[in-house]
Image 1 (cartoon, helix red, strand yellow):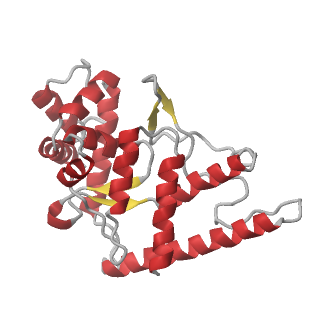
Image 2: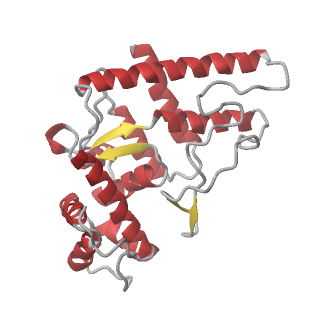
Length: 272
């Protein structure tokens, strides 16, 4: 098992290098988080202070990078207070890493990695910030690359498979098997329990709060990311869990955020 897990981690490091839109800070933070992945029990919970010290970066830059790695690029899933000593824990998104490298390998062979993908609606769960500060919507991150279907197995082809294609298919099958075993081992470590209602509700509150900040405009969003510490962020998420829109109201009060408008109407402030 260690050899297979090492291969997955190495694939993640390669994906961070292949993803063009990451800044240098985001790439370093992604590397540091994945480097803390415990191969025995699947724990991955470096604190913000440790990441900042290890990377010789200020805490604000680390918090901003973590937010984009999780909420924009989908490289990790962050679980607040899910790690040791109530630090945030991170779940590496192995499938996302395989997609990135699959697209990279297709480009390296001179093929359009999305030419044979089924057309699907654009994803609305993430906004992608371009270098010029514009906001564009990313296409569905879970679309399969040209030669793989949703199951991860090779799709039928009119051309006889080449030796390279057979090797790719065997490698992909090994990766799928390894990750299936890894997910099973993590479930056993966690006692076979699914995420608690509170954990799911907190993740949803974090996503709503991030969307509300973005709705104020890029300047206000960047201002909040630069000035918000972990305590303020936790208080805002707690408030958002209690009542929709309360998280943004708390941040506006404490940080004096600009933007001049509240969060989008989601149904009159119903309880979560």
